Amino acid sequence: MVTSEQMKEWWNLNKDSEIVKQRNKKISENHRGWKHTDEAKEKMRLNQLGRVMSKEARKKMSIARKGHRFSKEHNKKISIANKGKILSKETKNKISNIKKSMWRNITAQDYWGHDRSGENNPNFINGRSMVPYVGFTRKFKKQIKERDNYVCMNCGIHSEKVRLEIHHIDGNKTLSIPQNCITLCHQCHSLTLGDSEYWKQVYQDRLSKLYKYRYENGNIILTTTKEVNKNGFA
Image (cartoon, rainbow, N blue to C red; front, top):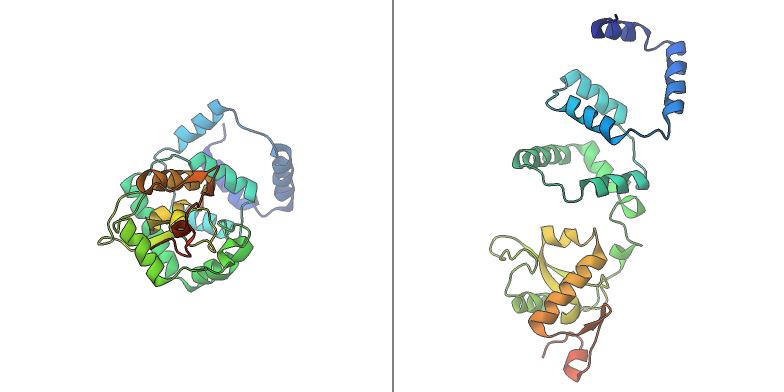
């Protein structure tokens, strides 16, 4: 019986062989489109639990994955798989530290600043971010925050603890009126990029209950001269 050490030794000696490369290519093509059963996936998951990879192995994986980009379909699958997943504090801290170190790297800054801009950005929505704001003045933003008592209308955190932002509920930045704007913290504001229609319904319902604003099928209903006022404030 061949041991794992013997296999490793064989692989180190033959991995650059043209015959081995062709064989691996054939295996890869034969497995394309092949799906593991749920039972097999669970076995693989259990086998990987607690496994600690060596620095050398992690470096090799990092080099192999450099420049690799997942397709939109693949990214969507990852997003669906991670929906509702709760990360531990330890995992969150690890992710935070990794991202902080990335931003100190000039190469990473260049990647995120240029290669992830415009249509290449996963949050790109028909160039909506390029549309200029209309009527979105400092005075107007202050009035919205005052109306919402300087708290995030999603998580309830106060402006004394975080910087608050004003969100256009239907995504239309040219419609800066109270019925279409709400106060959010940066973290809650970023959530609206994931499922804008869902959050639009949530925040319209919230403003309707709090301030008696009227909406129908996602559309704002303005009936009085005061409501039709440029900013909607007296």
